[in-house]
Image 1 (cartoon, rainbow, N blue to C red):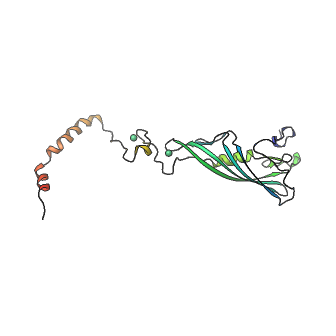
Image 2 (cartoon, protein in one colour):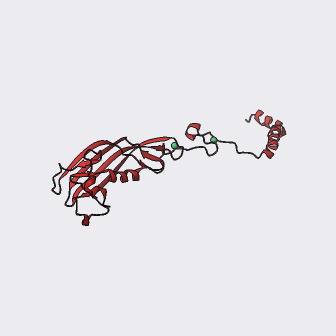
Image 3 (cartoon, helix red, strand yellow):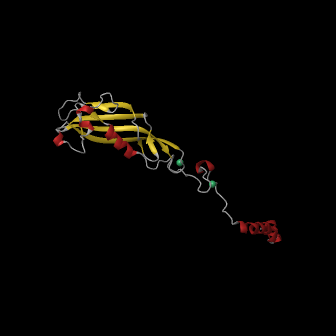
Length: 206
Ligand SMILES: [Zn+2]
Ligand SMILES: [Zn+2]
């Protein structure tokens, strides 16, 4: 089964948001033109904890350059990423910017088709597969709501950013010792030689 990009029956839709028409680019090596557009992000751009919401604004700056073998596309894309903080699980929103470059070869005979490369479909080229790879690779694997996010309390799951630095828990006490501990804490003040303390605090030194 030949690659769909090269199948005459599966021509690219020139109205596709990520399909660029290179007709205005002279087929003379060295010629270049730039295209800037904002398009809706395609679906399924996500990894475990982060993703680019489908339909959100994907801003593209594309330079198309004529080279001997075809058209070289250099793309800078900016997209919003939403996800969950890897430490505290609160929602995170940030922007990512990726830059990628890809050669779209002039259509060749089936025999010379380059398995890994991309080809022009007539005057059209499809940036989607190129951008998809670049954007997914750029997604943060462990997004953070802020660089110093303190995360969650390991004992009660409280958000430490909200609970404050004093948040903590008494070390759990074996119930068999709890009674003894209580008796000791009650006994302590009475057991101490109280007069000595009074003496110290009461005597002023010259
Ligand atoms: Zn966080
Ligand atoms: Zn806690």
